[in-house]
Amino acid sequence: MADSHFLYINCGGDNVKVNGTTYIGDAPANDGVATLYTHKDRWGFSSTGDFLEDNNELNTPNRFIASVTSSNIPELDSTARLSPLSLTYYGYCLRNGNYSVSLHFTEIQFTSGESFGALGWRAFDIYIQDKLVERNFDIEAEAHGFFLPITKIYNVTVANNTLEIRFCWAGKGTQGIPFYGVYGSLISAISVNPNFKPPSGTQTTKILVTAVGIVGSLLIFSAVGILWWKCHYKRKNSRKRDLRAAELQTISSYSLKQLKAATDNFDHANKIGEGGFGCVYKGLLSDGTVIAVKQLSSKSTQGNREFLNEMGMISCLQHPNLVKLFGCCTEGNQLLLVYEYLENNCLSRALFELAKDDEFVCLLERACHLLQNGSVLDLVDKTLKSKFDKEEAERMIKVALLCTAVTPSHRPTMTEVVRMLEGEVPVPKQVLESGNTSQDIRFKAIRDEHKQTSSQVTFSDSTDNCLLARYNTGNNTLTERQQGTRKSMA
Image (cartoon, rainbow, N blue to C red; front, side):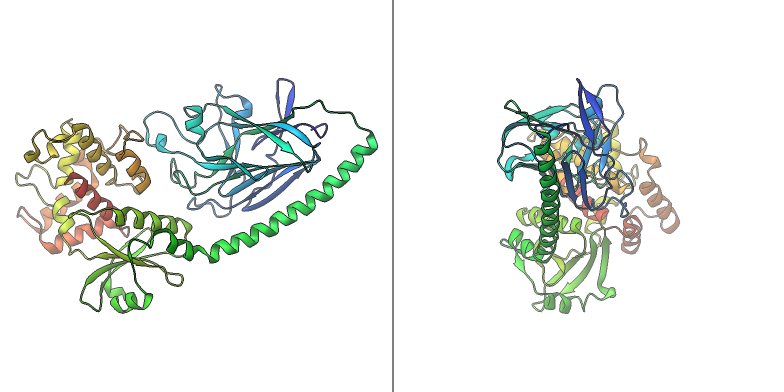
């Protein structure tokens, strides 16, 4: 930047020349959970936050930069800076007046077409001079597709010689597509041009302005750092209060003492399952009600989001085939959900019971077979005859089968399931992981076990429980989503 009237930044990349104008790259910045970068041309940025569940705790180089190589995308739009929480760009020593601020975006982290990666979406808020100019900004929706550059232009008044542009992620959008840790804000480039004719100044004035700018930048960055740490700890301490205010208005609240007494202090003998977000224990309340208590990790922010999602979804749904949510507990550092207790075999008999004609080893295999042969609607109850929406029924069955994928990362999240069921996004064409159900490891294992233990058509209760434990392999997510599949089919 040659003077204090213009600003051109290539976010996440190196210096790039576009139509005679050089965009200065910020790629040399050292990435981290709290980054402060200043450039000699009187601008800089600060970034806070750490991407969760991305198996990159050390934040390897360029973790906060996205890039793509394509001849169809301009060089300026082929890189972008990412932020999992808050990203703020500053311009200093700007002459007071009215400016045109252009923000350049290109969604380069999601894929197009009808693949699973196309289900990803991003949303974040944009503030300029502390004023909210975009809420839940979705790059793909604005550009009408992925890998399509789009520029948003705003008229901004600079009154204190400083320009502030902030991108803030507020928890919206997907977080595990195409892999975990893909979310937050994304910006490709920033350009700032005056809406007035810049006056000429003396060399002495430029030196004075530079000196004032350096001192001011240090003070502002120090203040920003202190405010961030204060907000960080305040948010951490108030997290439980936020959880109570968010969802506890419609369900019962249990004390930690009650649930400890019901589960014998979460005795291992009462443990009936374990999933990605915690363990499930069987318990008995003082009034004789048998319950299942799901204990979620209190240290994971991802767990907190799932905790709120699960309360919101299940507390709003009432159906004979859906497990009932009695209430929850957010006392201390505990995050607990209390469900009605269902005896073993309710789910297993529906999904893993042998068909009467022995053609399929279980209902799930029959469903996969029918889908492969284009007759998946044969799963619909015959008593309905033609009194149902065929397109909606097929969509529900396909979404249910997606939830039973062998590979956990291939199963959609609850948010993605809801969007597919509501028709907001298409169901991927490739629903089944294996092209041949006879080669599916789940069904093959059941056949092998059945041959070894029994010549009868049905499984015993003990074998059924053993098989379910084998497929769970320490992750209760499969069982929960199989239960959701059964209810969708019902």
